[in-house]
Amino acid sequence: MQRWRGVESAPSGWGRCVVTIGVFDGVHRGHQLIIGSAVDRARSLGLPSVVLTFDPHPSEVVRPGTHPPMLTGQHLKAELLEALGVDVMCVLPFTLEFSRLDPDAFVHAVLVERLHASAVVVGENFRYGQKAAGDVAALAAAGKRFGFSVEGVPLQGTEDTTWSSTYVRSCVDAGDVEGAAAAMGRDHRIDGVVVRGDQRGRDLGYPTANLEALPWSAVPADGVYAGRLVGSGGRSLPAAISIGTNPTFAGRERRVEAFVIDAEPGLDLYGEHVGLSFVARLRDTLRFDAAEPLVAQMAQDVDRARTLLAGHPNG
Image 1 (cartoon, rainbow, N blue to C red):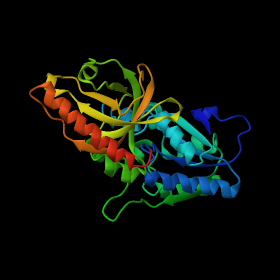
Image 2 (image 1 turned 30 degrees about the vertical axis):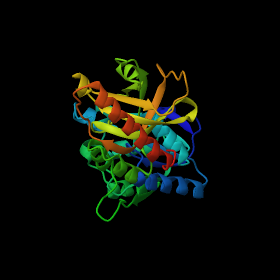
Image 3 (image 1 turned 90 degrees about the vertical axis):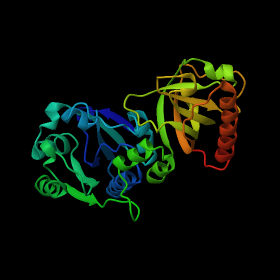
Image 4 (image 1 turned 30 degrees about the horizontal axis):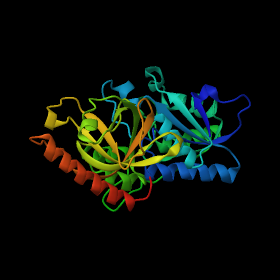
């Protein structure tokens, strides 16, 4: 899959293509259907498929300070799009100037002049242009003028839930990582770098990898989780993950720490870029009066996580 930064990165001589547009944060099951429709249309026409997405999140530019928690960083998003068969991921820098383009100017500057769209596939609630003035009907009308077709894909979900990034974020924020996984079709994951912590876990017999998550990451609610540490080369290691301030030791800084279960001797993760995927919530964060009952509880957490992960697909 090709990765472009801005539509100006389209190679010279770029021909027609099929485009789908959106932030696609989380690349959840609803997104997957939209993107899959674009990929299918492109293949049927013998054209490349292009996912046009944005960075930073448009909300942060239009309303500074409102950047939502992000379900997928750009690197993970690229991996997920490539797995769906996308040919090009084009990340469009979202600026205040860009946000002020009216719908017709957006269509002409991006879809017509640069990408030469033959077809555009979007969700039926798609909005674009200054103050989100454009909708699918307006896009279809523009397509008739400029020679591209438009497909609006209906929203998807269960009987009582529509799959959306907002819904997934609400699940993650509540610690309902299983609900988030049901909507995304995979376990929720946060990425970052392993940094040094207090090394208190090592003293207790449970050394942990402290994750410095990417900015704006959607970190689950405080608690203990069964999950996996995903490292370089795609290795996936079972883990018990703790999120919170370590109240037993009067901690104040919120941390994300992973204990790799049955780790190989000498495992050193400091400085490594890793992901933590969350399979199930085991319990709330608790405060203990001493280290001994905490260690006993950690042993139970690890046993539960080991058993649960043994019967869960490696995600």
